[in-house]
Amino acid sequence: MAKILVIEDEELVRANIAELLDAEEHAVVTAENGFLGALWAQEHLPDLIICDVMMPELSGYEVLATLSENPDTAMIPFIFLTAMADKSEIRQGMTSGADDYLTKPFSRAELLEAVNTRLAKREIVHRQYNREYQRAEQLQEKISKIQTSTEVKEHVIEQLQQDLKKSIPKLSLAIQMLSKLEPGARRDCCLQILKEACTDEISLLNQIPDAQAVLTPESSALFRELETVDSRV
Image 1: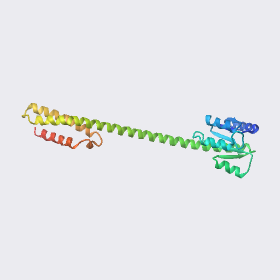
Image 2: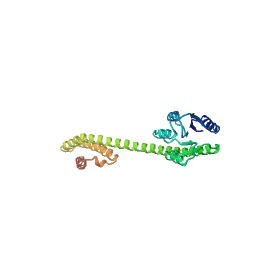
Image 3: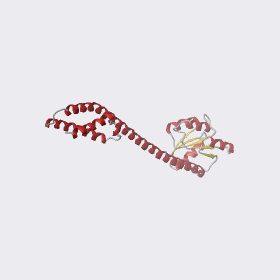
Image 4: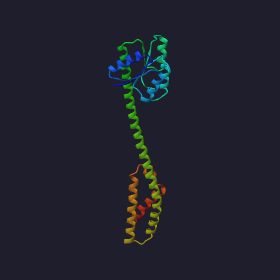
């Protein structure tokens, strides 16, 4: 069941169209002039609009132009009705953005064929839009995850750099002092503690991508120095 707006100033024609569409179980709303029809369309967003060309207040062309300026109503299928069979009128209607054109008087079969064709095409467009919208949402979700991951990585590396800047000088001083101590159990114990602490930091660095960028030349040299000192124990 579709929600269809019929804009027609001739009461008999308007009622006849509404009756035919109602028999097909569509929800039909009617408007007696272009102004009221345009207002209702923008507020309720029908699935399809059937609109007479020549009307008071606003003509069918003006109704279509008004709705085309609104992103919410611009894609609603629009069928023109006219009592004029002049080809120039049909051309003007189609070039102005109408989806179809019915010349009065028209048969029930002609009306329903036009309505069903436009609703079917609308459904296809609607499904395509939903698929593209879902793809866009999935892409945005992936982008958000990547951005979050990058931000977390940068934060961790930045924090690690700060921690290393604080810990490396202390470790360097401790090693220099301990290397001057006479060999013995106390010296060996302190050096072992320092080695384990540095090993833990190296292990942490190796778990982070691009960890080599974090290891400054000074810190790399210090770790090599630690291995040298430890080998002399």
